[in-house]
Image (cartoon, rainbow, N blue to C red):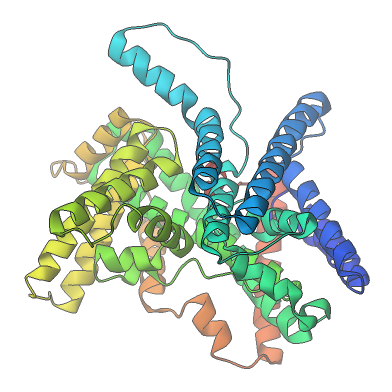
Length: 477
């Protein structure tokens, strides 16, 4: 079930809210209801009634793995809260990583081994479970926090709610136990709050607009250019990469906004995941603004345990590079993700070295240079293979091919206008949080939310009639 679907907006969400608030007088029942409803949301994320047998098997696999992972991590966390032991923490983290590695990286490792050794090893086809990276990292964070005494949760029902809570389950944000479970315990969380509902509708409407109207509009251009990477011109290549740059941001930012909005209906405030990342003045600043909860996780549970900056500059740069390398491979099993992570690791090292010289660049040069560096990175990230990445980069520096049209693309003048308009938006418009939290809700805001919502619904209707509804890009990670 997708946030950008009629089934979710007009079926699942109202029923889930009604059941939850009817049961809040008995908090345990309310937690169980919301956890079970979240499992239904997870299991039916893209149910196809045309193939019920196949879909049922996949549903059972996904749900069984999620429930098994949750049960095992609850037991490990329970004993870590009673008697913190390093060996138990290490065992819990290792078990999570082994499961993640098997489902996400086995095929990639076997393929790489065959390439290096000219072997013919084969493994059965493995279906990548939805959201396994997100709920694995969420539970690793819980185990570490339980060991450190920062998280305490002895109720299995509440722990299931922490993991399953559907606004963050599929594509984040990556949450800490203290981020949301403390909020569920507050008395005001058990009452229908019109102020939170009003803010939630604005968040939801803006996020839906970002996804359906902006992100999905960039998808055809980006897909066309990357599909014909070997035969596009320099203008087409740059426009295609820029289209993906904005598609990815508005797709993931839209999902995160909708997640925040939906959780506000339950009086829960999820952590922010974006803060105008394309206005960053350095790569360090970019990673403070982009996918904030992943950056925080990598910092707190990888970079700092590796030693952070406590063991001298050389070790600090090694730790930075390793952290970004692993952050890259977290996104997917492929060389392009690994290289993208290493690329950002090198950029971070270069940024810290430059900052050590204490020669700040003019603001406009810093912002432009950072944006171009990020865009180049997205070209690697989007490419399906190293050969496709090479073709895109070759086209991006082919200065002898200034043309708008080729047999592979249908670049139009309006594409330039759309790209330019969105570039102005990401550099000048307030963020969703700034716009919503800097004002008091009034009838004008309600009209704006309604217009955005209706506009998105009309495009969703056309999508339903013509194509499959588009998934969120980060679902594949």
